[in-house]
Amino acid sequence: MADLADVAGVPGTDGRAGRVDRVDRADQDARADRVRRVEHTMGTVFSFDVRGGTGPRVEAALDAAVAWLHHVDEVFSPYRPESQISRLGAGTLALSKCTPEVWEVMRLCEDAERRSDGWFSARYGAGGAFDPTGLVKGWAVERAAAMLASAGAAAVCVNGGGDVQVHGGPWRIGVSDPLRKGALATVVHADGELAVATSGSAERGCHIVDPRTGRPPRAAPASLTVICRGLTEADTCATAGYAMGDLACGWLESLPGTRSFAVTADGSTWTTRGPGG
Image (cartoon, rainbow, N blue to C red; front, side, top):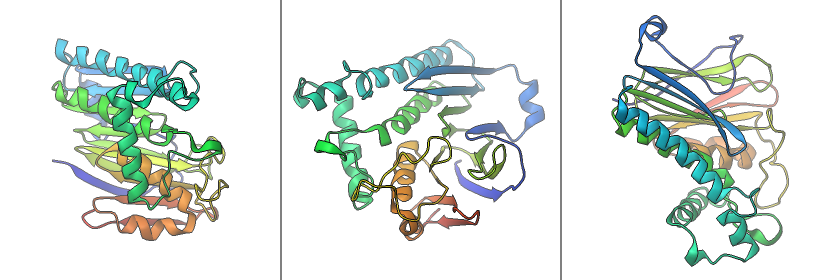
């Protein structure tokens, strides 16, 4: 059964963004049916932690999940001139000729833009070319984790650059403190299908802008973490919430099945628990 989240602050605890451990540490050391793998693609690092299934079916699913992430990079990377997204933006590929995944991601981006009243946008900057990078990594990770869970793995964690999708568990997911290097701001306890996504400026500088002005968000938190069942939604909500700045708290509080945790620029924190969250 999925436990949406149990968020507890842990000031002063060492850790790093996206760090995931099983709660039952002694048991995890004793188990032989555990597979770990690290893969580099989409300009970041993806890690897999799979437990309770090392047979041929799970191993084949892990290979398929890795191949899926590379496929997503080939189709959606704006840094590859031969990708479908780059060619679509350049006008050398018609939308009708794109793969079904492009149509799916475009629909998901439109849904996220509508649900966030435009605070999430895949069209901004000069010309408003379609750029789904704010959604596609979370979507790809969510699907990769589902492949492994469907293959019979008892517990799955896929971490894509610090954004995490888990199945089974229990898991303990550490969220780094954006203001204190090497410390955790909070720990999320999960048992079931759960996703954790964080947006902020600590690691990459201010890379999320207010889509209405094209400028850095007003009164944005130092970091904003969103917790819900699927990483596609968690990722887009974290992006939209960060872009909203001081409007994020009220919006996130209204989202069913969603929790959030923010660290503000002065080091204070706030949390939300939406209806059913």
